[in-house]
Structure formats: C-alpha cells, structure tokens
Image 1 (tube, rainbow over the protein chains, first blue to last red):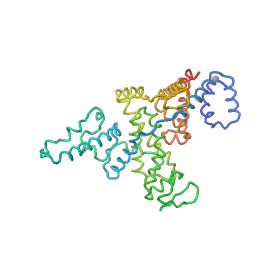
Image 2: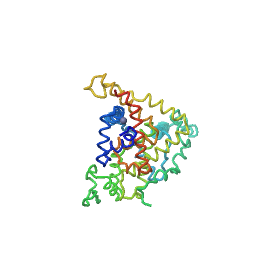
Image 3: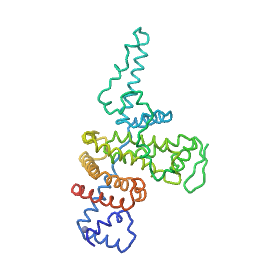
Image 4: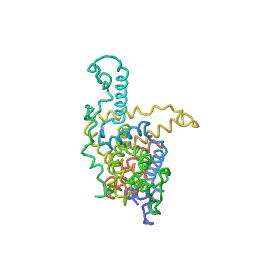
Length: 160
Length: 211
Ligand SMILES: [Zn+2]
C-alpha cells in the first residue's frame, strides 16, 4: 500500500468504518511499516486526546439569566434579536435601567422639573455599547425580523 | 401531569415534580409541547455547554459564541412545534447552531477589523492562576499541560472553517458521518473528504509539538 492509499482510507480506518478485512489488514501493516503515516496517526490521536481532556468553556453565570430574559421577550413578541455583544450589552442595559430607576426614586421628593432629568446623563453609552445593532432603545425592543432566521432553521429535520 | 415517551419504550406518566434529567431528548420535546416548560430548561441544561464549545471552536470568539447559543435556544423555543419528532433532536439543534456559526463566519470575513479584534482578545484570554487548575499537580506540569492544550486549540483554529466544523463534530461531539452530513448540509462524500483533509492538516501542524 502506498501512502496516498493510506491517506485515502485513513478516516474510514480511524472511525471504524473499514469493513473490508483485507483493506484493514493492509492499512494496519502500512501503519507498522511507514514512519510518516504512523506519525500522522499518532499526532491525530494524541492531539484529540488533549482536546477531549480539556475542561471546555462553561457558559458565564449571566448566560441563563440573559436567556430567560430573552425568552420572556420572545414570548411577548418583543425579542431584541441577535445584536453583537448581546449578553454583555443586555446586562449593561439592565444596569443602566436600574440606575435610572434608582435615580428617579431617590430624587422623587425634590421639586426639580422632570425635563432636566434625562436618562441619557446616567446611561452614558461607553465603548461596550459600540457593538449595538440599534442605538434607539425603542427600536432595540422591536421583534427580531432578521432575514437569516429561516435560513438558520432550514434543516432536513423540520417537517414542511 | 403529562405523558413522556422513552425512545422505543412504553409511554411514561410524568408529574411536574418528576426528575427530567434521565429523560431522552424526544421525551423532553414531547413534554415541552404538552405544556411542561421545565422540559425546556432541561434541554438548555443538556445542550448549553456542548453547543457553546462547538460554536466557539467554529467562530473563535467566546462572547459572541454565547450570544449565538442563546439565539439557538430562542429559535428552538420559537419553532419547536415545527420540529419533526421522527427525527433526532440533537441533529436539529446542532444544525441551527451550525448555520448561525456559518453566518457569523461569513459576516466576519467581510469585516477584517472584527476578526483581528477577536484574535487579539483570545490571545489575551486565559488569565486564571495556574494553582487553581489542579492542586495535585506540579506547576511546571500544569504549565506544560495548559501550553499544550492551547497549542492544540490553536491548531484546530488554523483549519479552514468548513474543515474545522466537520473535525469538531466528529472528534469532539462524536457525531456520525450521517449526522454531520445533515448538520452541515453536505453529502457523505464531502464530509469524508473534509474530515480526511482536516485530520491530515491537524496532524501536520501539531506533530512537531507532540514529540
Ligand atoms: Zn505512509
């Protein structure tokens, strides 16, 4: 067996899909005799072992909270959709809204005219907001009408 | 109370308090469609980490991967009634994730600045002190191990996008060729040739670091 033949059959061999006994024996013999192909096989096996042994990413603590919030918006038909940096941005928006509310409550007894207390003073959009798809808060709460939604859902497993 | 179905088994009565964890995907979907919302939480619990890692390895940006995985769950939630229960749920949810990740990669290729910022951010990524990783290991072993893991992850990131996705689905998510074909929308021949090329390239890049 030549190296090119081995390369051709390698994935079938690694995934246990090589049904033909004679071919399997040839591949195994080539692995014993060819240092180059044996080196490749070893690198795949060891490399994948290292990948599998890694802890992997965990969702951040805010992940479920933000998802619940988006699901609630989705049920109400007001999901802000997929904005860049959405998780961080939604937390910042929530914090900003909280600050505006606190600000409003603590200043209620004062006789300051409402017009002077603009939320913009508190919720100053710094660099983390750069990725916002829609700067206008009302627009951000509009239903998600992203054109790619049906494309992303277009899968054989969905009944017509 | 609702009726849950174990794949190939008898229908099983499930009360609101019954533990959902042992149920298979198909039963969870049935329960959710029958109005038991806790079943959806269990689906999220079951898939959030594996989808996050799949999308992250496809697009290379952990924050954006979280956003996309959330979007996957939103779409599953919104369109569950359209899911054909004769099919495998995990293939459906991975297909949605795969399509969103592919769209993201396409958008990124049109915006080199975003891509550059992502690479820079990931390069500065892991700042956890080594001693928190495993108290039973020597710091130099821990360092070597983490360094090797980073190298291997970097190697995966070097593969072309459509090769990388097939490689991750097979080697890390354990998907069959047929499932990968469904998820990626390719035929079996393409899956096999992409997997072969991905493994070949992966081995070529990582071999010098493993010796
Ligand atoms: Zn050879």
